[in-house]
Amino acid sequence: VKNISTATLTLSDNPDSFSQLVLDEAFDPSSTEAQLFLLDFCDEFYQQPFASVVTIGQECPISAFDRWLRKQKSLSHDDQDWIFISVCNSTAMMPIGKDLFHPCVSAWARKSREANAVLRNDELLILSFPFRAQYG
Image 1 (cartoon, rainbow, N blue to C red):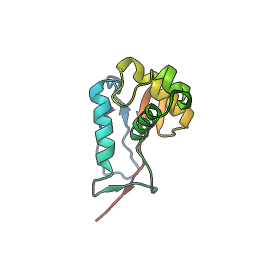
Image 2 (cartoon, rainbow, N blue to C red; image 1 turned 90 degrees about the vertical axis):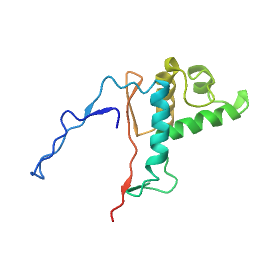
Image 3 (spheres, rainbow, N blue to C red; image 1 turned 45 degrees about the horizontal axis):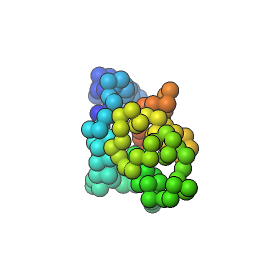
Image 4 (cartoon, rainbow, N blue to C red; image 1 turned 90 degrees about the horizontal axis):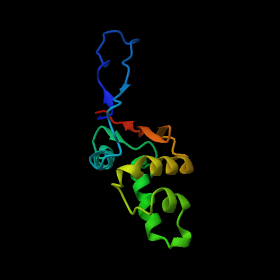
């Protein structure tokens, strides 16, 4: 995963010892490349044989955000959300402009109460997606 440093990930024979995940402060999810990576990663992850969605209809948060952008663009101006118009500058889909990414995704995440998007100072810090591990 691109936004997690493996600096403190170590293997241990002690099952009571846990690894620590450290955020990579240099990772920028607002870049075009990162947005496309996140969309592709999320879409492909649940297709892997070792993982499945926890609940039927579950969607990766970044995919839900992209779907929301596309839906908003398809609505008449009077029916569009003010966040889409004012904060997201009526951007139709991802990737969105680097300068719009954090304000737009942050406003969407707050309004939609997206629990898997962790924000700090109106910037997307962590994007998680629950999954059920498949064994065997």
